[in-house]
Amino acid sequence: MFQNIPICKSSEREKFNQQKEIETCDIHFFRLKPNSEELQLLSCYSESLQDNEIYILINDALKKVFLWIGSAVSVRSRFIGARSAGLIQRKRGIDYRVVSVEQRHETPEFHDTLSLIEFK
Image (cartoon, rainbow, N blue to C red; front, side, top):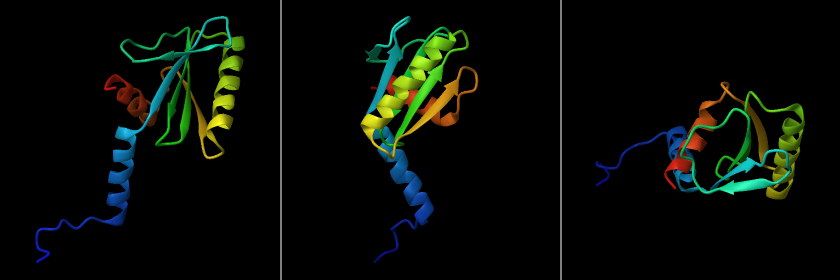
């Protein structure tokens, strides 16, 4: 009767469920406007990230706010980006975490989140 039911470890099931959540979650992609404190909502990701800009990605499934900082960004812009990411974190809730990502030091988690934007 139960011969064709696949047996799956609880850790594998959790990983599968988490991957499913990530694929169906809302991801918000913002760019910090140059010389401004204003965030611009971007609808898609089609080109490489610019080294003189700051981007913020919000992944609701992971409950993370990624703050991507280009290598040519000024100290003032870094400060504004960090403050903007902190405000987003406070609005989203205590369980969200801000993850700062420097250009050329991106994590696989960041790349996964970025790749999901392309398919929206």
